[in-house]
Length: 354
Image (tube, rainbow, N blue to C red):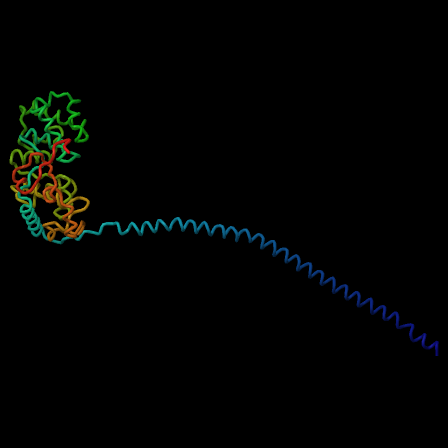
């Protein structure tokens, strides 16, 4: 019996060992495979991490770039805001009047008639006693007011009463007298040259023809027409800044060149009315239809004006904008016509007064 048991039990051990070895080998293989998979997974994870690191700066750069866009948009935003704010400041387009030439003539002449009733005392606002004084005063009125010229010329004419006297004057002494009018050196040169031309070419007399007047130093068509109309009674249209501004507002013409304005407006009126037309328009431009803020609410020709509404339309506020006799202020002349004084006009004060 013992022998049999020993024989039976002996072969069991090798089999178990072999099975154990095989199981161990399988486990090792599985473990190796798992390790390989793990390694691969680890490598993949590392690659992914590296890729994410590389991508991260790009994202960061994108994030950094985003504020740049925001900053740019913020910088751009005020420009848009300024544009929006600036838009209302643009002047509203004028209402264009569609009318025939005949209708334009009727409207223009009616405006002149209305202004003649408002300013029956209209006159040249330069003080003068003779054609020589008028031509000199008109030359000096460039780039300054008639008031400043009127305050300056009494001293000039007291010292140099004739063209011969002014032609022989010391330029430095004349400059000192004319200093208050501005551009006094150029004006001194003009009035001395003008006086020499009068003395040498016209016997000391101011000529009464347009073609002669415009040859004088400092004398253009505007100055010539002032002299012809007011010293010689010969009709002419004076296109100064007031005249040009108003006739464009009234759509009598859209020309800006003074000579073209003169021709366009002259075609609307009889020649006999040209001089007084100039006075009416210039008076109105100085007193009511101002350049920057017209007193539309106090304007007698508002129903005829296509530019009504460009200025103050409230009657009470508009009345506060009136100047000279309409507002109770001194006028331009130290020695105005009696008709002006009768209408409530106040003489201007002399230079240095008050």
